[in-house]
Length: 262
Image (cartoon, rainbow, N blue to C red; front, top):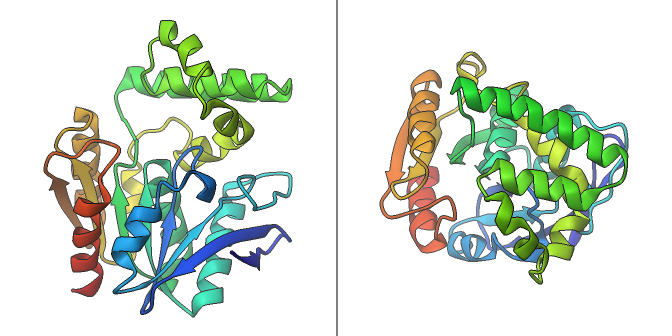
């Protein structure tokens, strides 16, 4: 494990494997190195790249500095880029894809290329309203220190039936998820005010961008990916066959190697 200090003094913990041009992997909601979700992907990329997996602020072994703002997480990514060189490829999954997009707009050509997998934007009117309600409820329960309730709100927002929530609380992973539930507003911030597809902002992405979704995932993910790829000046869309939101590293890694090396 290594550490780098972000602009506001926050310590960002990260692992580094492989050799070659740098690739920074940006995890989604609740993700941290402790879960190991990105390790198979990093392993698949490591013969070609120097791969960075990091704990987003407030998670794992990274610290946090208040007050939070989306710009702070962009500064964290910039600190990692500066640590490994002057530029890096950037890959983000789920809400981490939204953060990676925001970082690329801000950091410009410090990001060599950008790859996104299923950024969960949704421009449906009902979902935009639900997203606003979810963000408001998150603030309320976390202000009272109710991380478990915040986690429950998140799980129901992404589709878990309320009657399944008590069973989820009994899962061995629940305490680890609950420990980082206070960072859920950070993911919400990356998705914007109402979670809709940021087509205007996407026009300001200055680098080649691969926007991906899975053919077995939620239908709105495909709609979103196509809209993003069309809005990004140098955007390319690709659907990974048979993949859900939990994309398999053995399918994703070759797609990223091809894109980053082309």
